[in-house]
Amino acid sequence: MTKGNNKMLKTCIYSAFAILFTLVVSCQHKEGDAHSHHHGVMDKIEAETGKVDSIPISSDYLNEHIKKIVVDDGEHHFLIPERESHMTSFPCSKCHTDDLDKIQEPEKGKKAHWDIKLQHADISIMNCTTCHSAHNMDKLRTITNETIDLNESYKLCGQCHSGQLKDWKGGGHGKREGGWAPPRVSKTCTNCHNPHSPGFEPRWPSRLNTQKIIERK
Image 1 (spheres, rainbow, N blue to C red):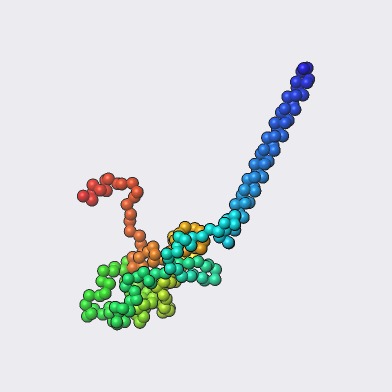
Image 2 (cartoon, helix red, strand yellow):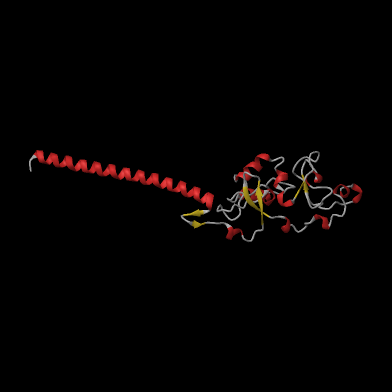
C-alpha cells in the first residue's frame, strides 16, 4: 500500500472516530436534557397529584394513628395533629371553678400549676392571662381578646412570631409527621416548643466531652 493510501486510510479512521465521538456526546446531552425534563415533570406531578409514574404515593399509612385537623388560610392547605384529646388536664374547667384572675389572688395560697415557670417574656409583658382566657378556661385568648381552641395555638403564637408563622405555613419551619409524601401533616408550635419556656435547653454534643464530665464530678 502506498504512502498516499495510508494517509487516506488514517484520515478516514480519524474522521470516523470524530463523528462517533460527536454522536456519543450529542446523545448524552439529549438524554441528560430529557432526564432533567422528565424529573421536572415528575416532581410537578408528584406535588400536584401525589403520583409518580401513575403509582400513588401517600403518607396516610404513616399518619393513620394521628387524629388531624385542617389548616386552610386560602393560600396554604395542610393538616396538623389534634392536641386537646392528648392533654391529660384538659378540659381545664374540670378543675378551674373560678375565673383565672381570682385564682391568682395572693390570699388563695399556693397557685395551681405552681411548678410552671414562665420563661417566655418579662412578667410585666406576659402572665397567664396573656394567653389563657380568664373567663373561659378551655380556650386561649388573643391580644384582641378573641378566643382560640388549644388545637389552633399557632394562631396565638403567630401574633408575635409572625416570621416563624409564615415560614411554618410555607413548610420551611418545623417538622412533618410521616415524611414528605402528601398529604402534608406538620407539627404545630406546641408540638416542639414548651409554650411556657419555648427556648430549647442546651444539649450535649454527639461526641462525648470527657473534660466536661470531669468538671461536673
